Image 1 (tube, rainbow, N blue to C red):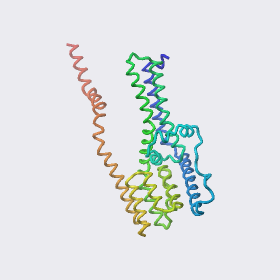
Image 2 (spheres, one colour):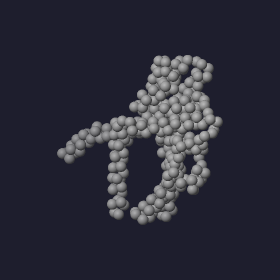
Image 3 (spheres, one colour):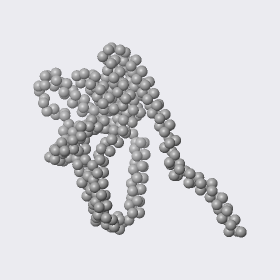
Image 4 (cartoon, one colour):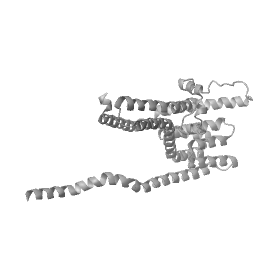
Length: 326
């Protein structure tokens, strides 16, 4: 019990966890993304089969299959809790489904998991905080302060799923945007070599998987939707909506207009590839311009004190020796 209550031990545990997370992150960057890519491509294949089933069902006039054996369902404990407590209505958020799609989570299982943890985490963190404060350490603090800590933990638990989802969306968007100009160049080469747009997108999705798994998934899904959706415009708009990036939205609009008005697709892709490269370069220049301002505080806190010690240290030692010798 004393080991748990010792602040130094808690600090050591926190530092150990942070070091372990840093090492794990560095190692994950050197490991290939094959298993992750295979898993995401399997999910895209399921989506392709679902679109194919819907297309066949629409051609039959809605007859035949109604339930659809390929449609993913969620029979887990989390889904039963969400359904029994009606958490979708209780924690209703009109942007949750759209945000889940932007983060790369599709199907009912991730949505039920989000609602379940958004409901359960406040109670879990509140119980753990109350147990730690009132049973383990028992600090000499007013009751109102302790109660405030418990309420704060509940608030953190309520907003933690949203923060996690936003971080996943930002990470996914950065990965897609970083590899998108190169994928447009590959797509331009494939289209000008005589390949159809569906085959070109499918080929590029296979080639770009080593650079960005997320972009490979989006391109594969775009190829499936181009094949089976009633209007090709919906496929391009769907990709733009899932990524929420101005460059990709402009490409989707240009490709839609090229197919609508019969303009050469290669010319549109060439212009869009140049614009996306310019956007990536502008983003890099913006980060470089903001670097001096961001380095000001770290330099004041970490570099200048060490510099003063290195410069003034020997002089102070010599002055001290001279005074003692005199």
